[in-house]
Amino acid sequence: MQSSVFVQRRRQLMAALQPDSVVLISAAREQSRSRDTAYPFRQHSDFWYYSGFNEPDALLILSNRADLPAAQLLCREKDPAQEVWHGRRLGPAAASDVLQLQATARSEQASMLNQALNGSRAVYLNLTEQPELLAQITAQMQVLKQREKRGERAPSQLIDLAPLSAAQRLIKDDNEIAIMRQAGQISAQAHIRAMQCCRPGRFEYQLEAEILHHFASNGARYPAYNSIVGSGNNGCILHYTDNSSEMTAGDLVLIDAGCELQGYAADISRTFPVNGKFSEDQAALYQLVLDAQYAACNAVKPGGNFATVTAAAEQVLTEGLLGLGILQGELTQLIADKACKQYFIHGIGHWLGLDVHDVGAYKAENPQGQSSEQSFVPGMVLTIEPGLYIPAGSPTEPRWWDLAVRIEDNLLITKDGHENLTTAVPKEIAAIEQLMATANVS
Ligand code: GLY
Ligand code: MN
Ligand code: MN
Image (tube, rainbow, N blue to C red; front, side, top):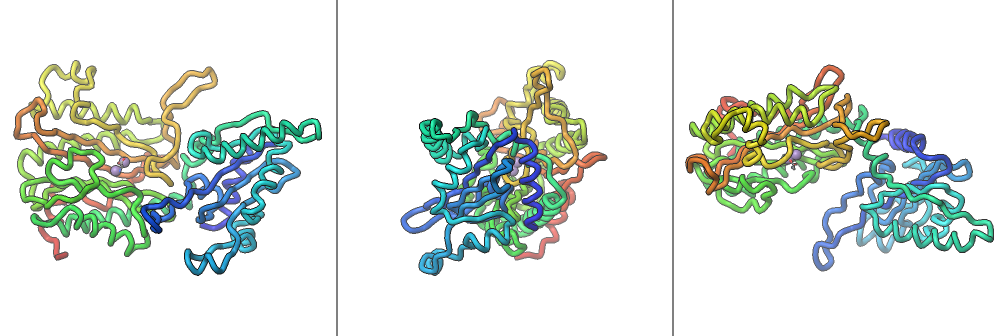
């Protein structure tokens, strides 16, 4: 993404602040995995969103004050001895140029922070995610307060940045949409590869490996979250990531996997038979989840919201579960009681973006302070992911036990409705069976 995109985002944020304010955002830290090894570095999403800078040990200072630069970055200095061990650093001189801001060595942090806080009316930072920065700022504010008789001025307000950055990140611009379209495409193809490679006797982690291989081979080095490959009753564990079982003919396998591309997540779930052919009961339960997914997707359009989408899915699931005899009772009452929630135990979906469970409010507040559902508007991206999970011992016939189905797509709200970003991976029963029957990947 070009640096002008980040400049534009910073301008938009500055316009939403109180006058004479400053915004502080810390970069993510490197995380130790075990002695002398670290997890792959992942930048803090807000920091990335406003800077485009992918190093740890950095601080972004944005301001709408006339006497401060609009954007300053404190970052690691060039250091040949460190770089030969741990990798290249951009360094302040190149960072100023590349990122279109004023970059300074990290060693200047104390004085820069003091300069940014002194005379600012309000300080915006993420109050829950960046406790170390909060502690630093609070300490600096105390120093400034003590020096007020010398003419220094401590900010009078600490304001949570999260709602502002979340509102901005919730609406994706054309650059983000192009990347998310590509992330959806790569992830869809990875699911196709998993379907083609699936055989009884293979292990779940081997399908995971096929997926990760496809991600990285197509420019998405990392998954957006740990891939879930759950066969048989492992599918009933929502965040199953052991992926350690051998897959058995006659079982379904539920895969929830998406790549991260330039920071943006895809998030796809598909469920298919290990041996390529649905049994009658598996097909019945699967078709029900698919019908619910279509009903939910049909409700995804401007003016809709997560409540209307949820209601559409729950109506179909409840009717279907009643039809299959998995629920018993009277339909209207079952819907009123939300009886399907016994087997549909998570939400219908979530915002998607730089984080897989992306930021963005689910409720909006009107000027009278009343809370209402956040309406969909063009540029939002969300998942639609109904599922049914029937663990052994559930109060239904044992033939349904241990079945788990989730079908998840990523939808962009457009002015006319939505665009499904992950439609390339089949979800119709016949299409899945045909793909698996004709697979020639060994
Ligand atoms: N992959 C996590 C989720 O579907 O929410
Ligand atoms: Mn998912
Ligand atoms: Mn999801």
